[in-house]
Image (cartoon, rainbow, N blue to C red):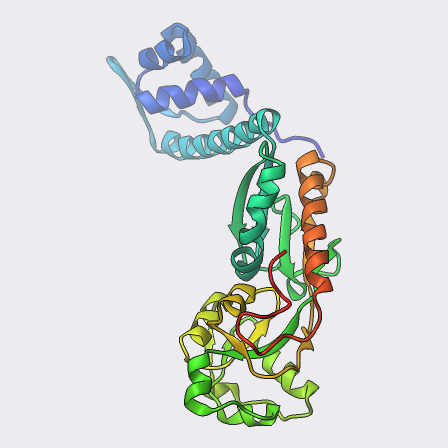
Amino acid sequence: MALPDLPPLDALRFFEAAARYGSFAAAARELGVTPASVSYRVKSLERHLGTTLFSRFAHGVRLNPEGQAYLQVVQRIFADLGHETALHRARRRTPLLKLVSIEVVAEKWLMPQLADFKAVHPEVSIVFDVDHDEVDPDRRDFDVWIAFADQVPDTIHSERLLEETLFPVCSPRLIEARGRPRVPGELHGWPLVYDLHWTRDWSHWFAHHGVSSADLSQASGFRLYTMVVQAAVDGIGVALGHSSMIARELEQGTLVTLFDSPVAAPAPYLLVVAPAARLRPEVVAFRDWILSRASSNNLDSCTPSATPGKHPFALP
């Protein structure tokens, strides 16, 4: 595709400086040229655009409305170009790894282990963001993206990362107050909590046990899974524990399982590597490391213990 008829970069630089200072002389001092040179470059840009950008007076210049509008565009382009240039320079000096993940995996599974990766690769700088939206392969601000399978379009290459099981958990205080349910169907009389992104989890678990699904209109829904976990810890209700995400709470005894009846989660978490980043050494190293950690996690698929402090889902 042919490039549009763009003005010379130098002309844009001279215009931006003159507009910023409101003076050709001040712009000339910054650029190390003469005021006449600034005036010449600005006039050449105006001829290219077919309009004037400055109102000229005997003792100076002032941006006109056309110039003000054009300045905003030029400064935005320069800012974007400067940002990308800084990133490329930083990559040459320090390997930069840009991670995106859904919040629960970032906070509950990856963050507790990330120091191990940094210990082996201290030279790699990491920028970590969270996002619950569908994976967008056209985004340029990520190298590796961890998402739930529903968020990854079929057209995007991905790898299975975490296979999880689901099982009901609650605060020991809730059991003390109500007693322990004997069969899954008895949970219909219990307060339930759930993640608004994963509304099918409870129906999936009940269906596996041949029990009609609970009415979530009577349950408490939360936008983030970390809020669901905290609600369960606080005794608000029973949550469906995602095996990889509640290891710490089970270890500490702030949550306990209600049944020895884990069910495979409806879908796995997937790992997406940006095509342009696949061969970068730091990305290859992180991919290999995280897949190894996930493999160890996925091997722990035995039945969870209902005894506080004992469980098979501890972080590697």
